[in-house]
Length: 260
Length: 288
Image (cartoon, rainbow over all chains, first blue to last red; front, top):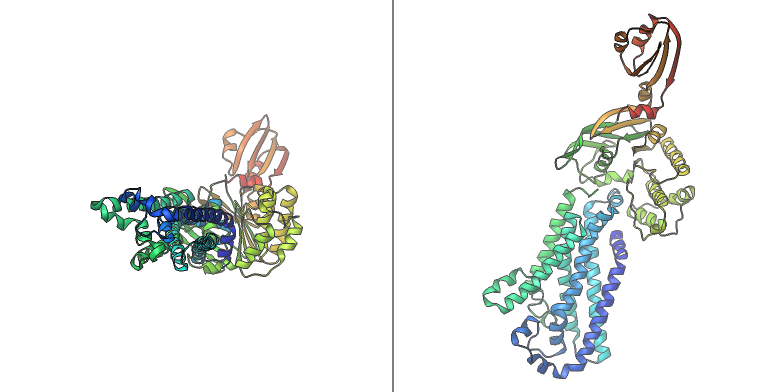
């Protein structure tokens, strides 16, 4: 586990930055909610139904319903997704770009161990950020005395974790293939953004509903993850993407030369 | 200790190693000499499993180097030519981390750090290039390996520490350790190594002991004749280079077999003869 601990240590600044941003935004959002929670339904009705759907709002006018649209649909995935993507892209690729990897792999450490521990550290970092968001939500509930169940908080945190881990796995895969941090991050971000766009397209254009099947966002939040938890089939799809990214990544990483 | 046989490595159309073969005996200091881009680093990276050859075989202590045989590296230490540790670590944190990964509790780094006057508590990013190189040298020697693979190990070191480094590798050799050292510095190779393998454009052009190379070392010879021999006879002399004629005196470089030359001058009346041997580094230069 030494490589995991080292990776956590190397990325603590990034983790602290993203955590601080998450804490600030979550508490701010909950504060805003306290200001207009009574009139949320009226405000929502000012917008066309189609726009409400695109923004991720449904008929639920509770705190969880508000957070589902305002936080879980866009800002939450942006924060956790960006964290997962940048971290996943850098964990192996940056070490190759910086050439710090040479001394490690010249030790009696197998490439498998190196890859597995790096992947584990990716999951642990994303889990920590998701837990920070969950704890902040709970803290917000206590500070502002609002109604949001622990179950909703758990669903929300886990949903973000799965989404971040999926995006992170994709960029981790490309980082381990190309050994180029920027390329891997761009591919990961591209997949995530495309997923969001396709999610909006399928919700508004009936004839294009098939595109939802290639959208990460659809699998992540179509079910209203903070309200209902992850749909099991959708979870399986996201989990499969992680497994495929891991398996393909470790296979290629074992086959290729380390960049010199 | 090391056997490299027909190692071929290509990067696309570029052949980095063209079926090279050489052997490194146990307990020796073996130099890999070549210009930048000759293939020295690629050879070392193949031995360490950082790059995979297209064909050929490599053995370390009679064990075949394969993609999955990472345990073979338990007895090897490596110092990369472009050594890059984690910049936000202090040297002591870095050494402890490496030792932990290797499950090694050696404290040898303390003595080595003292010897090279390395500040263990300063962040690596704050160290000068030479001090960073010392971190690399300490990490290479601290876990008491049987085989040290050192790629351009003295880059950035000042002359005092280059001498200290030479003493260190001689001590390790005396303990029976094997050292494979790459350099494009002829002086470093001629000062340190028992054997030299010269690589040029991915090919081994020579792999010999220092003594064998020294035997072939060039000698500058100046001969003053009573009557200068005919130019056509002089041109027939074997192993002669850079022949120049000035009045009755000729000067030239000669290497290897001298019998022909001695027979030749015995047939002429000689006024004076001077010889001067070149050093090993001049001889090595002949291969480039």
